[in-house]
Image (cartoon, rainbow, N blue to C red; front, side):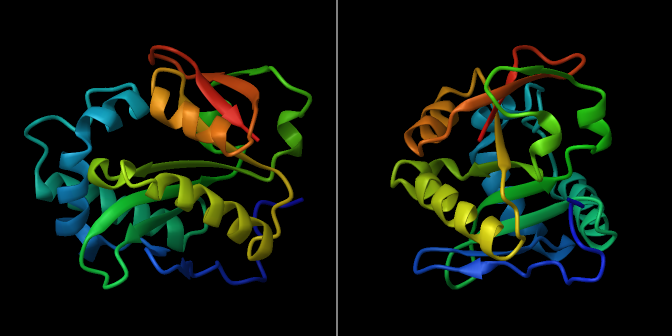
Length: 197
């Protein structure tokens, strides 16, 4: 199945009582930067890099968001911002990639479960602002994403990716009833990324 039917529009997102998911825009830079900097310790585990640096600037974040917005418009990969219901505060981000995204083709993929890599429709990475994780918003996000990706995207099998060292997300995905199907090892990054489905 193709990653996304070129004749269909890209899903716009969704709204729940607690948050809104919509395509990220470069104009989200200030609110996104605030969320990134609050969550930097978790993001460094998630990314397995030193990003974001302590001196990560709004301008540097703007360049990142411009790239994410461009990739979304070009239908190469899709990034959604998670906002509070009023749209004032960034609560996190969701990234949807085809399984043949360049960075994934460079990774070493080891099968752990019964799934075959080529049977995945997409892989999803996500993070939630530190101050919102304690309330369980990340679990609500995963539940909402699973329904939305099946209903609006037509995905039958989606992989949810996190680094093995990001214990909170590992436990979250396990508690959602997902199981590890693959391990990804990206060049130059410590530890394995676990793909749950």
